[in-house]
Amino acid sequence: MLVSAKEMLEKAKAGHYAVGQFNINNLEWTKAILLTAEEMKSPVILGVSEGAGKYMCGYKTIVGMVEGMIEGLGITVPVALHLDHGSYEGAYKCIEAGFSSVMFDGSHYPIEENIAKTTELVKVCAQKGLSLEAEVGAIGGEEDGVIGGGEVADPEECKMIADLGVTMLAAGIGNIHGKYPANWAGLNFETLAAISEKVGKMPLVLHGGTGIPEDMIKKAISLGVSKINVNTECQLAFAAATRKYIEAGKDLEGKGFDPRKLLADGVKAIQETVREKITLFGSAGKA
Ligand SMILES: [Zn+2]
Picture 1 (tube, rainbow, N blue to C red):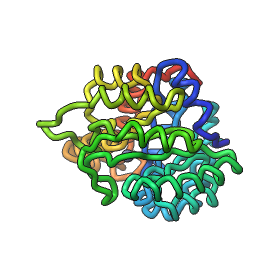
Picture 2 (cartoon, helix red, strand yellow):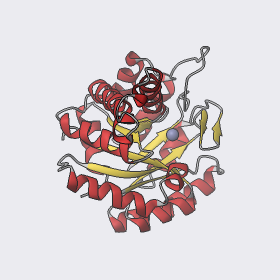
Picture 3 (tube, rainbow, N blue to C red):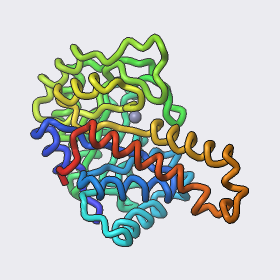
Picture 4 (tube, rainbow, N blue to C red):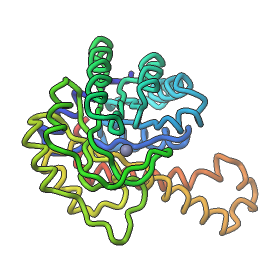
């Protein structure tokens, strides 16, 4: 059964660790992440961007796949199915389709409009027992065409959104989606500390988890980050392993062209990445 991310993130915040949100793209991704979370007895959040939602033929398809897989694989750890960077319309579609958690990213709206739309979604999610993530201030890089300038959030605005009753809050602290540029300035811990102080117990979310040095991740967790989003890193690991398989000519040996063989090394690479992240975030054994 899918669960809201509320309880797992409140436990994480209190226990000074973070739960990973791993974005899914297809059956192989979902299976790799669920099996690894189960193996490590870690709670887990499956992230779905609107682009990935379209790719997987709509949110209902995804709910069916994930629920079926939890049952079929005998997954016992808490699993939240979460819309990543949802639009206002997308959030409603996911709520209707049976997601257990949504992010409404109103960071590109003026703060008044972000507050108005977030307020409305707080009510809807509360009625249905779903967790809701809100965002303040653009995060750098690009995700499905949403571009941000590596901005940092205003701690006052963070408090305004946190006070609306959202479950968790994403705030820009110099983080970027995708690969980090060589001249990246690093995470802005002063801002993170200021936000943490303003929002109290509210779990904070760090987007763009790929390529942030381990010491910065640990420091961010110590300053109140309880959910870390990982997407690109699994994609890079899957692509590298699949490239290696094909370049070695394994698809030409015997039945190596069978998709169950062709994609197997890529799946193992995703599992290895998820294992490393769960270990780094400290959520192993917390389910
Ligand atoms: Zn993000």
